[in-house]
Amino acid sequence: MTRDQIANTERAIAFVVEERKRQHEKWGEQNHDMPTWMCILHEETGELSEAILHRKFGGVEAFSELAEAIQVAAVAVQIVEFLLRRGNNGQP
Image (cartoon, rainbow, N blue to C red; front, side, top):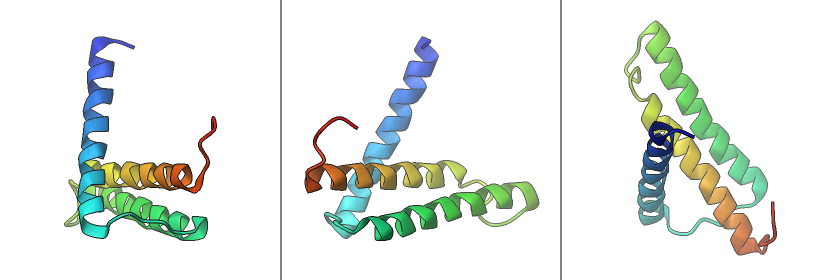
């Protein structure tokens, strides 16, 4: 990886960590079953899809792709955190 690529990765991870903090402050620790986690993740990916379509065709969410992508990543991290709490501490 180049320095610029590493810097972008670090910046992206920092955004996700900040979103995880915000989510934790709002909702506390979440321990859903996997079907519920998938519904939450799909809801977030739906919002990202909406933002992409609004950018393409016009709409109020036209410039929210980054925020929505960060939320998708943060929910994915929450799922990993849940699996670790549940005892999936081995290698993936």
